Structures are given as C-alpha cells and as structure tokens.
Length: 501
Image 1: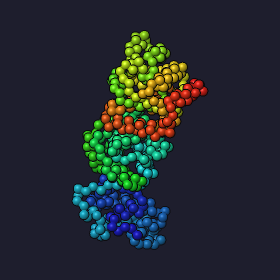
Image 2: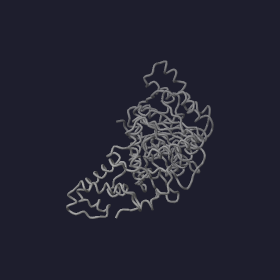
Image 3: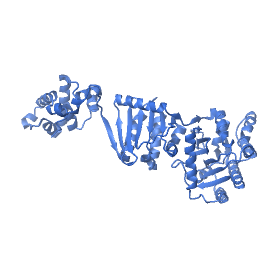
Image 4: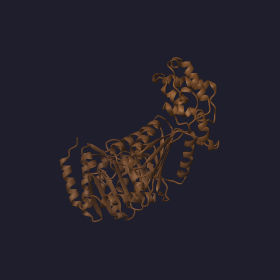
C-alpha cells in the first residue's frame, strides 16, 4: 500500500521510483515548479495533470497497471485495461484530488511559506564517501571557469588508506583543473598541527601542478563532530559529517538545489575570510623572490630536514656547481650572472654563514630512478636561477658523492636512507623544512620541465606541522640507527651497479 501521508504526486513518483528532476525534464519545466506541486504549494493545472497521467499510464502498461492499481486502491477489469484513455482520466482525477491523510499528517502543514524543500542524495560509510566524491568530481569536470571551495575538519582516512583510490582521486582533480577550474582548499588543523601536514601531503601533487590554492585557519578548532563542505559554484555541494568517536560512520549528502548551494557558499566564504594562504607559488619567472626565501635555510642555526633523491644544495662545492653550469646552453653573460647564485648555494657559502644541523632524508626509489637518466634537471637550483638547470649523469654522480662525503665529515649533518616515501604514495616530490622558519616543495619530474613550480611557506603553524612530521618520520624509521657512513657506502654501491638507460 502507498504511504498515505504523502501527496498524490509524491506517492506516484515514489511508486515508480522516479525523481522530481526527471519529471521536470520530461515536462520541460523548472524543477522548482515540480517541488511546489509535490509539496502542494502550487496546484497542478489540467494541462500538466493530463501529461503526467498519460506518462505514468504508458509506463505502467507493461506491468498491466499493477502500480496504478496499488495507488488507486482498486482492481481494473480486463475491459478497463483495454481503455488507456479511461485509465488516464482516472489517474488525472486522483492526481487532482487532495489527499486527506496528507492534509492531516504531512509535516508541510506545519511549515511556514519561507521553508524550502529540496531533494538530495545520501551516501553512507567510507565507500559511500568515495562514490559521492567520484560523482561530484566527474560532474564538475565537465564545467569550465568554475570555482570550487573545500573546507574539511576530517582526517581524510576514507581515501588515504587506499592507494588505488587516492591516485584515482588525484587524477579526477587534475581533470577538474585541466578545464580551467580553480580549487580552493582549507586544510584542517588539530592540536599539534599534525593534521595540516597529513592533509597537505595528500594534496601536494595537485597544489604543485594545477590551479589549486591551499589555505588554513590559524585558530585551533577541533570539534568532536567533523564537517566537510565541498562546493562547486552553481552546480553541486557535498556535505559530510563524521564523529571523532565513530569515524567509520560517515554520512555524505549531495545537493544541487540552488538555495542550498547559496547557503553553503555563504558559510564557506565566512570560513575563507578567516583563513590564510598556506603557500606562495613560484614559477621560474619568480626566481628572485624564490631565492631570497630559499636562502633562509642557512641564515640561522635552526635544524633543517631535506627530503629528496637528488644531491642536496649547500653540501656541494662551488667548483662542482660551476662545472655543472658549463654543461648548460647558456650565454657567457648568463653564466657570469649565475656564478654568484651558485656560490650562494654552495658548501663554502653555508660554512661562512651558519653551522645548523641538517638531516638528509634520501629516498632510495627516487634516487635509483635518477641514476638511470642520461641527464637530470636540478629542481631547486633551477628555481634559484629562473630557468632549467640540467646536469649530465656523470656530474650528477659527482655532486651526489661529494654531498655524501661532506655530510659524513661533519658531526652536525646526518643521513637517513629510506625505501619508502614520507609522502607516500607520491614518489616524485622533494621538500625542505627549517624549524620555525620556512618550508618548501618542488615536483620532481626530473627528466622534463613539466609542472615546474615550487611551493614555499613561512606560516609558523604550517612550518611547525611539517617539521613535526619530518621529526616523527626520522625518529620512528627502521633505519634510524644506521650510521651515515653505512648509508653512504650503500649508496656508493648503488651508484656502482646502476647504469643510465
């Protein structure tokens, strides 16, 4: 039996498992008009009543009108079933009539005229969240020139625990960005700012390559009920709710109603007004600004972490850097201009201005890939100079070996060799972070200039979060007790066995 508390049109749609939007498309009317019919705030006129009745009689013909019989609470004779026009008329009368039960029991009777009723989709659990995000991003990827706004207090475990899904999620975001859309993201903050780093690491490839802008709210805010709002302007909004105590009981709602979208936008704009930009983004054209910030690595004794598979700057002599300079197709004038910059990236320069501790986290997989290339683009140095800076494999190995020997010769330098990335599953990102000062990232498609941008932050809580993450990674690593001499010898053996392809 139908639910008698619903309006007749609602009962009809529910019986046939059709959405109001589908009916609006068939009738070529605005969806808001169908919503008003369903809530009985507007009466169906005879023209549309006839069209609707005719549609559903036709839909039910192959089922011998069982669903219409159920709605009208009567059995049709075989003779009646042969007269489609008569069935249409019966359904028209039923649609045009008021539902007494609905009049008494419907919640609409208690609503003011200002209340807006809208449809939405519900997704349950972590799989549901993934399905919701897939649908949302696929839908938005078809638009162009749009702004997407994301605020989340959740830990994002629903996608970060699945490498396969995380990479698919990344590709879907790239699809959105490739169509001239912009994504604005507020990364969450917890008590120790750890969550900033965790969330940021997931988004790094997108921030590095696409027009995706990162923000954070400095004020600590960590409620037990976690909210996520992801809005594509004038298209759709995802709203997620989880509890700190029941993290797997995720509910996700997808709305397309214009008023809901506008309300979500107002909430998000208030949050973004409280937020700060997390990074400055630098291309090669901004090399002067980039280098002035990058040099802060050596300007005081605070410790530094450097994560990469490439030779670390400031561990290599000016002589070898000049040798690398000669391999590039620069004019003599340009080479002269670059010599002082190279000196300021050398070990000699660093020893004159600072003696800070440095931990060089060498990513073995990234290094093995670099050792197979005929030439390598030095990302950080390229950004310092403002143009691609390549070295041959022979010079690359010289720089690497000298950097290792330098680190082994001084007590304030340390080496950690790791076979997995602290930015897992992303294997092609390098980072540096100096305690209380500055942190930065570059994408490392070393063999090309693809995605050649760098991200730098001097925001105290963001730097603190990244430094905490590096410290925790080093202190908990299985190789933490391996001496730097052992690490050096392992890498030297790796170099001896590796041949460029």
